[in-house]
Amino acid sequence: MRNPKWNLFLLALALAAAISLGTGAPSAAATWGVDQAHTEVNFSVKHFFTPVSGSFDEFEIVLDYDAENPSKSTVDVKIPVASINTGNEKRDNHLRSGDWFEADKYPYITFTSSSVKANGNGQLVARGQLTIKGESREVDLPITLLGKKEIPEQMQQMLGGSKEVASFKASTSVDRGDYGVGVGNWAATMVVGSDVTIEILLEAHRK
Image 1 (cartoon, rainbow, N blue to C red):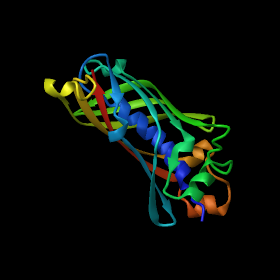
Image 2 (image 1 turned 135 degrees about the vertical axis):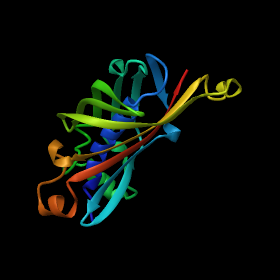
Image 3 (image 1 turned 90 degrees about the vertical axis):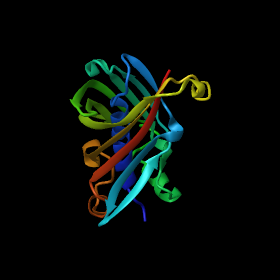
């Protein structure tokens, strides 16, 4: 059976990716490089009553974070729709089709922040435009800083010259219907849920 849920996931993924980025790290006006090998963009949507999860294998994130003045921070996310991965080739191909994401016509999901706000205790919110299938909506992405630390000098060369590392967790939900993702029949509206939960676990390094 085809599972359109994954489309939701992508939306979520995009959001989620944006969220993690926005959350900051230490240092002022610093550009953080995302460690893709230690970063995950995951999503979950219900099939009837059962939560089904998947991931997005490819993404590009540009994060500039100012710890002393978060409002000067920015984050840009670009996700190739074709990289969706639910562990089922038939389902993934269906999600890429015109029934769902229409990947040939709309190859990317993007998020561009317009503001970043710090709420204290390592909590931030990145607000910006999320675009899916040519439809753009303003969304808020809550972010939690899991931790940050300086990298010992003897390890910096091994890590490409990075001097600091920070980890983030972002979690939110989106309604796939807001972006026209999914066919308008009973299978799309009843079998697969409308709400998609997104969780991003991100590791970033600063030189």
